[in-house]
Every structure is written in C-alpha cells, then in structure tokens.
Image (cartoon, rainbow, N blue to C red; front, side, top):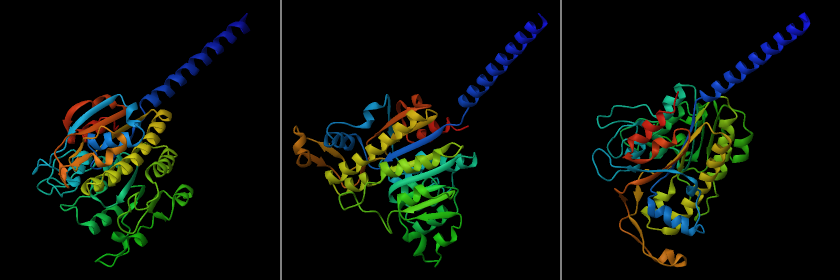
Length: 358
C-alpha cells in the first residue's frame, strides 16, 4: 500500500512539473520578441499596383491581406514628399523637409526603428534594387541633412550595426574624395560576389553589392533579385536566435514612374510582388512576425483609361514625371497587424511598428 501511494505521489509530481514546464515554454513563446519585415515599393500608388496586377494575369499576393490602410505622405515643407522625407517619417517617426535623412527640420538627428531594434539585441538586414545609400534605405541607418551626401551615408553604414545588406552603390565605398576604401576598413564584414556566396558565408556581417553604381532595371538586364535575395536574407536572419528587423525596397517602381514608362513600373512591381509571396510564406511558418507592405509616395500621377488589358500600355496616362501627394496603401499581416487599418500619417508606420518591439 505504501508503495502504491508513493507511486501516485511521484506520478502527480511528474505531471505537475511537466504541466508547469509546458506553461513556461508557452509563456516564453508568447512573450518572444516580434520580428518585423517592412516592404516598400517606392513610388507605388494604387494605380501602379492595379496595372501590375492586370499585367500579372490579374493576380497578386496582396489579395491575401485582410488588413489594409492608407497613409498620408506629405513632408513638413511640401504637400508632395520625396523619398528622404517619407523614408525618415517611416523609419524615425518624425516629419522632415524634402531631402533630409534621419533628421528633423532643424537638423536634429533621430534614431530609426532599425537602430532601436539593434540596441535591443535584434539582427537587421536590408535588400534593395537601388544603391544601398539611396534615400529610402539610408533613412534607416544614416543622419544627414542632404540625401545627396552619398559618401557620408556610406561612411555611416560602414560604422552601423546592420548585419546584412544587398544592393548597389559600391563606388560610394571605394571611389571617395577622402581616398578611403571603406570596404577594406570594414573588417567584420564578408563582401560576397553572388547569392551562392551569400548563402554559404558564416560571417556575422555580410554585404553583397549587386552593382558598382545604380543597378540596372529588369528590362535592361538585371537578374531577378528581390524574391530570391529575400529568401536568402530570411534564412540568414532566421538562423539566429534573436528577432530581426528587415527592410525590403522595390526601388525602381519609382524610376519607371519618373520615366512615365508603364512596362518599367509593372515589371519592377511584379518582382516586388513575388518577394511579398516569399515574406508571406515566411510568416506562415514563423507566426511571431509582423509584415508591413507599403510605399513612400506615388510617382507619375498614373491613370488607367483602358478597357482592354492587352492594350494597357497604350491606354494609360501619366500626369507628371514627378511625385504626387496621393495617399498610398498599407497592407499588414501577422503580429500587431490590426493596428494598420484606417487612414493615418506616414509617421504612424514607425509608431505602429514600435508597439511590437519589446
């Protein structure tokens, strides 16, 4: 009888310990820090997205998003923003003047969400189809009053805590007025020549320059990058225990808008849409992730007047070769995504993402 009660006692103790262990593990998972993927299609308003969908056999990964909002994009000094002011608003949560990166109207520097995440132990990455020192990516790691200070922006990237980047603009690191070779000074970095080398590298910091200056467009011969590169970047980030902040920019949708070239716009956005598909697959497998897809502004004032999808190229109208003040859409999925519905200022993108940072 004594042996029977002892057996019951140990069985209950084991079940209690197991139950507490499971609860503790669930608690850890529930309290785990959220990783954030911010995807920006530069210059993509609703008309650019619409045209790309019809060009892509009437389908888009955006159709799987349940949370959709609109953001107002104006700068401090202009109803029509540029990528520097809008990038700063989303990265730092403050309005600034056109041309300014990571600073306010009085040139006061602000910390970006990427820098804040890094201080909290996050890993970070950027993948863009422009140079890595272009206005949008620079807004997440640099503080300069003029977006054209490319050599200073490159210097600040070389001293940053960014872990991975893929983009163009190698010349700003090696052909410099100060005669420095920043790449040779970046001792902690492994600079690779292709994605295979990126995938196989075991260095903590990896850089991959896809071009010496600005990358070519897809129509000019650039190999598809965003979806394949994003997959590689996510594997690297997810292999580490810490959460991460990742910026993805389809930079050249904007350049197609400036050229009033619909084929340029849609081909670049369709590539961006494939990258959205990669990100969606990732958050399905890694639910403690927030995915935000948006733009920084609309470019070209695009209007679609065609009734025939096959004649879409000849039946569109661009009203400008510059940007417009139109609101741009925001799509969100994952942890905290409900915050992104409604209409709000672009500075709210920063604030809503910050709600998920522990």
